[in-house]
Image (cartoon, one colour):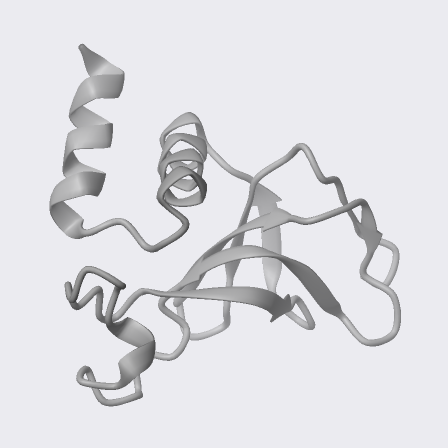
Length: 116
């Protein structure tokens, strides 16, 4: 697994052993390497064990996005990765555009608009 490549122009879906997930859009081309840390724009629910009132879940506009939070790096050690689906890419594109985590309502609208 140490040779996985993550390309700047792609969006990836990362799955942890407990079923939690993340979307990853690398800042630059990266090889997993020995440290397994990939830098990029991240939307993740991998920290849902944290308290829902934790500040990391509060967007700048005051909306709570629990259990999803934004990040800038992720460990891919032992985690399955694949290219994101069309809808996952649309969600990530929207998140990058607003520079934050989309709400459930915003995600729903993205999915509906992709069908129409």
